[in-house]
Amino acid sequence: MTALGKARPHADGMAVASFVLGLVGTLVLNLVLGPCALILGGLALARGTTRRGRALLGLALGVADLLLLVFLVTADGTVSWHIPG
Image (cartoon, rainbow, N blue to C red; front, side, top):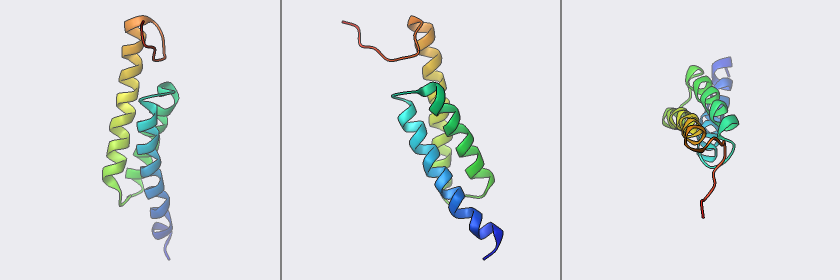
C-alpha cells in the first residue's frame, strides 16, 4: 500500500472529527471546538479525503461556531449560552 493509501483513512477520520467537533461546538466550547473543526476539515481536504462533504460541513460548522461566539459576545458580553428568566 502506498503512503497515499495509508493517509486516506486518516483523512477520512479527520473529516468526521471536523464535522462532530463543529456540531458539538455550536452548543459548548465554541471558542475551542470551532477552530479545531476548521483545522481538521482543512487538513482532511488537503489530504484527499473521500468524505469531502463531511469535511466541508465541518468547515461550515467551524465558521458558524466562531460567528456564534461573536454574536454572544456582542449581545451580552459573555462567551456562554444562558436562558434569561
